[in-house]
Length: 291
Image (cartoon, rainbow, N blue to C red):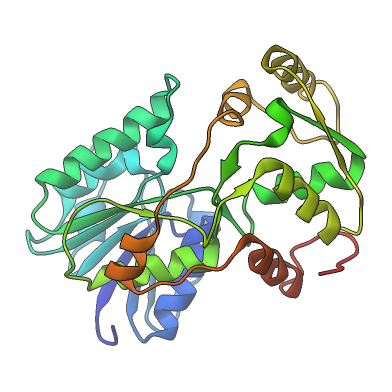
């Protein structure tokens, strides 16, 4: 990777910041691209920040990508076709961060965007789209919200007693996936990336509560009741809001085979328990750490 020139779109996000730090540590030159100039890192040895508004017509993305050996899009999969059109050379590689949200059984416009990004990748000569499950760690908006909720609520309502399973992947494991994908030649087929093993929502809540030094019980609530409670979170200050779409996804199992990820990219993800321990060690858990 040393000597390569890599572009990261979404440089100021949770994944983007961690990815750039890792790439610089590997000796790569990094073009850090984001839409908000004030949030971009300062220029440094091997680091070249560029402000580009991907939604603006006639943006200068092509100029920003000039000389890039590989472009990593961790902003949003919906930008895939715009990025493909702006690649400086046909041989330039594109790695896109998709989402396992594309597998939802509910109507979802974001899932449709991910599916379209995957279709665009099938037409590209050189690229890979990876679909991560729920991402946590760092400044995530997933498990961090759960941690804030269990800090205050001794009893948490969930549909089906929180029995639906998920397979969260730690941000740092996802970064290793993206780095492995830069020069990987093991095919262009879309790849699902997930944590080491599935875990139920109820177990996630209990482990998060334990990490905070709290005890949180689970009460089973019907779907319509959860929708009403989710709506009420917008009215209560201090409690993270929950959308109706998020309530629907609480009903879905999101369990995936990670054998292809391990075989193609040689990345062995951590368990959720190990990921919480990483968060505790990094000072990312508010409250008492008991892991």
